[in-house]
Amino acid sequence: MSNPLHHDVAIAGAGIVGASVAWHLAKAGLRVAVIDAEGPAAAASGASDGAVSVASKKPGPLARLASASLLYTRDLAAQGLLAEAFHARPSFVFGRGTAELAALDTLIDKLRQIAGPVRVTGDGTAAALPGLGPEVERLVTMTGEGHMPGHKAVRAYLDHPAITPIWPAKIVEIGSDDAGVTIDLGNRRLRVGQLVVALGVSTSTLFPFLPISPRAGQLFVTDRGPVDALPGSLTAAAYLVAKTETCGNLDLPPVVIDPLRTGQFLVGSSRENHADPHRVDFATLCQLMRRAAGAFPALSERRVIRAFAGVRAAVSDNLPIVGCRSGDPRITFATGFEGDGICLSALVGHEVARMVRGLAPTEALAADLAMLSPDRFFSIAREVRA
Ligand SMILES: Cc1cc2nc3c(=O)[nH]c(=O)nc-3n(C[C@H](O)[C@H](O)[C@H](O)COP(=O)(O)OP(=O)(O)OC[C@H]3O[C@@H](n4cnc5c(N)ncnc54)[C@H](O)[C@@H]3O)c2cc1C
Image (cartoon, rainbow, N blue to C red; front, side, top):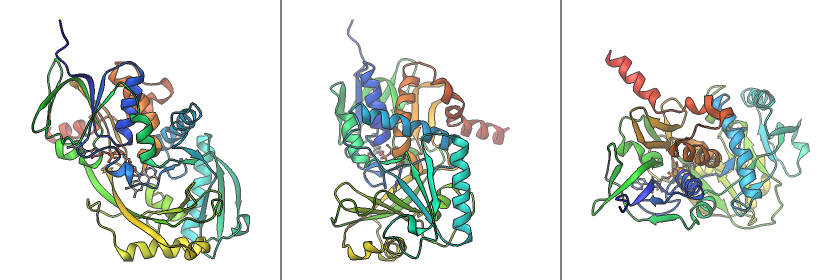
């Protein structure tokens, strides 16, 4: 009898998370379709800083999962899959003033506790790195982290013969039953065995019960210059604070300067509570530029050639949503990654592919992954109703 399903699994969303899940499933021998309203890396994955960073993660499950994902990303790069996308480089975090200097102490403690692939190799002054400016009162140097432009990783993951691309095709409705999942694309319907929802900030349009809200960010890119002007990323401690909220908010702009392999600099990024990926404003960019140039004055000699914005998917409890909802095993969520999706994508792809195939999570990660279950929102809803 012929199989009535169009595909074993469909992935909703061709961002870095959906692409990674698709590649892991295709590699395991499943027939996979990837559906996107626009195309690969059309949303946040194509508009991010691209830091594969443990330093910027909130202590706890997120930092531990990021540490495991960094190691796995490095493996996938060494095996060739992500060789073009990922590159390892040192990372430098700087601070000035009491609150930023305290954030640097917190960072060092956190990395010591994780005892993972990221190591602090220096804790000193601006003199440790040539070319730094007055914004740098203290400089912490780390090894082990890397940079990965989202669009390059997406391209690498989707280049698998068992993946069927379906775009542009906007999903307007999703329904599941005992035998499969029906995906309504407006002008046609697809019937698949299972669905993985990797729709980023758009997830809540189709699944309004998930508490995901938009958090936009602006970035800019400079023209080309000498390739080794800066040996690694240079991040303000305020950026760690903005992401982890361990020390409250700072007035200093949370800037990250990442040197690209082209000799350009990618400088980001703000955090704004709106969903418009086209909103780029001069005042925010000037603020980023001023602090970036204060930390690395050679930047003021560069021209800004492009400014753009992206929208992160922020979950109400600041943790991503990964897994099935109890009672609906055919739909698996992999969404709500806020500013961490590039870093977590490799590991999440690996683990979600295991979930879809009915396998247990990797033992060492099971407890942390369980904290990301979508069920955490439904038990709250049940308690409130009771
Ligand atoms: C300014 C900025 C800086 C960042 N910096 C970093 C960083 O340094 N490190 C890091 O790890 N992360 C960073 N992030 C976060 C990271 O980019 C995201 O977490 C990650 O890209 C999310 O990937 P995703 O696949 O979940 O979602 P997305 O990339 O948003 O993909 C979702 C896809 O779903 C598609 N879609 C939406 N609705 C529908 C529909 N109805 N039907 C079909 N398709 C649909 C979209 O077209 C899109 O392609 C940053 C993000 C921003 C905005």
